[in-house]
Amino acid sequence: MPNKVLVVEDEANLLVALKYNLNSEGYDVFTAEDGEAGLALARREKPDVVILDVMLPKLDGFEVCRILRRESDVRIIMLTARGEEIDRVVGLELGADDYVTKPFSNRELMA
Image (cartoon, rainbow, N blue to C red; front, side, top):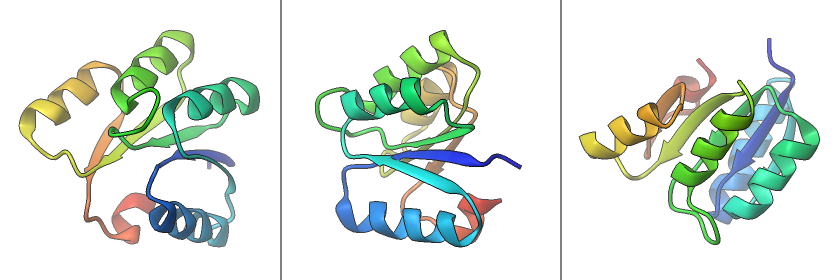
């Protein structure tokens, strides 16, 4: 079971809820609100899983995914409101392991 989870999400309420739910499941959670900070945190903390929004300030989630995949084999879950087929395909082709669209259930994400 992965221990360290990085959540990169710019919606403050969702970020707080995700952190709470993941902590409740026993995960150590790190958070960032923009792509640059998320990438820096991923490099420093070496998480087991990254939950990554697509529409982020400073550096979008697709670019963060591309860079992370080039640098590591960390598991990446894209969590985004962008649910069009092309967005899912791009995310998966860039190296995401899963693509979950908002709205979502916590049960779905934890699975």
